[in-house]
Length: 153
Image (tube, rainbow, N blue to C red; front, side):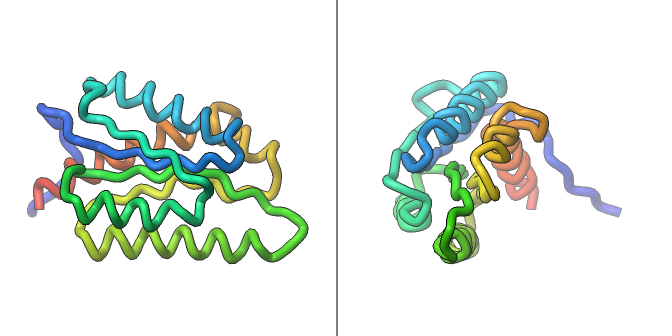
């Protein structure tokens, strides 16, 4: 029986982080956690590209352009969509999640969905170092593991 599981990667790879400016107090924390985790994994700064975009809706197009370039082995998408008074939340969440998945499947590259979709700001803060963990760090771990696993296929 063959078992494929993530293995340590001897040479780190090029990775891109797309970060939404909207809810910047939260997305700054997502980015800080992601960068700290990359440092722990031994990524050199020249292997990391960070791209700021206006909001979460702009993430998939940016991910598509990065994937099309072929310069990165993984793309991590970081943002925060917080429920408000209108159904806008539903539309944004659906567009961003489906857009990221479409880029991953079209370009055969890990596109990690590190976009928080919470009911309120308090829940978002719980997911950037609070009781619910840190989505920025977890997104890097997911990218690292997926690159390792896909490289074995």
